[in-house]
Length: 345
Ligand code: ADP
Ligand code: MG
Image 1 (cartoon, rainbow, N blue to C red):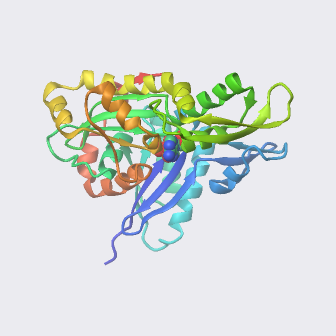
Image 2 (spheres, helix red, strand yellow; image 1 turned 180 degrees about the vertical axis):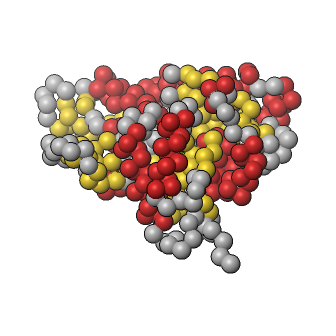
């Protein structure tokens, strides 16, 4: 008898990833949707929609439905999810796959239900399962979450940073801050506007962050050219920024991330805190790739921090693997996520 495929979905604010047990990551695309303004129908999703960003005629609008870590437009998020899952499902026509989805912390039960429904409509076996994001991130990072020891993970995505201490498949203490990659991009855009009178779009700001962004102002001779529009003349212009400048432009934002991590450490029971000191803190999500962020967090929190292998993929892989431990994951699902999550907005 054939076994059902096991599928993990990371519904991120910046990227959606789908992991299939035995095949690995099969979808990795931006969480972007292009819509027809007239009737709100979906024109394109993922890579195709992203390539249209900032370049569409009036009748088409390109949005990131989950930007800033809130589900800005639920119906569009649902359509996007259905599109991605549907693309994977096509291959499993006979036996419906088991699907585990990570949803952002703090989504309401109505939204949770809608995510479930979208997955089931797209062909997932009922019921589709949900897993807390930090738990999936920890599993995907290879942390032994089943042990009775405390392990800490900090996931820095596009819209949100989530820090959590995990033990025996459960989230013991956590914090969520609406401060992550997107807000760093915004800080970079407003810096080049203020300092260099240059107007740049979101994508350019993100490219600068990836090219020369740094969490510490260490001079490594890193610099890059930035193209945009001169605020005064209105004409195209190119300037150069250094990694030291960018580090200064984002330092206040990074302080908010540090604060969220510290707030978890402060609330962690002593036995588990001692485990975290021993094991260190594992960083996941695309934001973890910011240069020297591990060092900044190590300095500020006094606990060694490490970036996971393939930090962008941890949540999707962890969601897929979590299906192997369904009973343990379910046993620990919080009934009221608010009771575990402190928010720093
Ligand atoms: P989400 O889970 O919210 O979809 P991801 O974990 O996919 O987010 O991470 C996306 C974020 O990571 C974006 O803000 C992106 O700019 C950022 N990012 C990706 N690569 C790097 C890098 N090398 N340096 C800094 N930030 C990065
Ligand atoms: Mg994520």
